[in-house]
Structure formats: C-alpha cells, structure tokens
Amino acid sequence: MAFVIDHAREIVAPAALVWQALTDFDSYGEWNPFAVSATCDLRPGGAIVMRVALRPPKVMTQKEYIVAVDEGRGFSYAMKPAPMGLLRSIREQGIVDLGDGRSRYTSHFQLDGPLSPVVGAALGANLRRGFDGNVDGLVRRAEHLAR
Image (cartoon, rainbow, N blue to C red):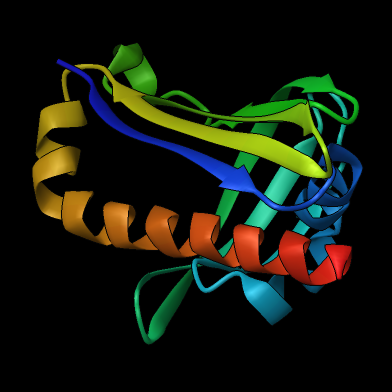
C-alpha cells in the first residue's frame, strides 16, 4: 500500500515565474520551510541535495536523484531505492499555464514498497506538514515575483 501526498494549487503568476521560483534552488531558504536549502543538478540522473526540516528544529540532509525534467513545466526526483525494493519514493512537480497570468502547480509525493506503511505511520504527519509548507511557500514566492 502506497503512502501519497498530493497538492494542486492555482497561482496568480505566469508559469515562467513559478518555474523560476521552483528551480531557484539557491533561494529555497528564503521561502521554503521544509527544504530549507537545496542544490540541484537539474538533469536526469543528477542529484538534488536538500536540507530538510522534517522534525524542526532538527534538519537532515536528503540526497535524491532527478528522474525527469520538462523545462518550464516540471521535474521529478526519487530516493535511491532501499535494498530488495523495501522502500521507493517519487516526487513529481508540474506547472500548467492557465493564461491571464495564472498557473496551476501540482505536487505528487509517493512512497511504495513493504516499508511504506511503516514510514507513513511514523513520519506521515511530519511529511504532510512539510509538503504543505513547501507548497504554500512556493505559491507566496511566485506571486511575490509576479507583483
């Protein structure tokens, strides 16, 4: 059974500005309360290294790998799978231009594998809080850039 967190938000900013905010990894500390810093080689196979506030004030380093990039429209990344397929993750983020200076941002996070119910039970509330803050912060950042 998978553990899933989905978000879909309309943003009052053009898609290009949402993409700019999402991929300005050097600025994550200014707006992202979950991934408080990040470096990323935004190409398939490249690494994204984040300092994640999963259980604030404690911050941990999380290294994941870029799965796909659709320039200006989104990207996805995944953890290195645990041995024997015990745990796998994927985070997919997408941006759709709605016209009139508006966009739709979607975020899909999923854990699969035999350990996913255990991790979901242990960390689910922290992950939901983190991704909620991440998405809210991105909306604020992109709308600020659009002003």
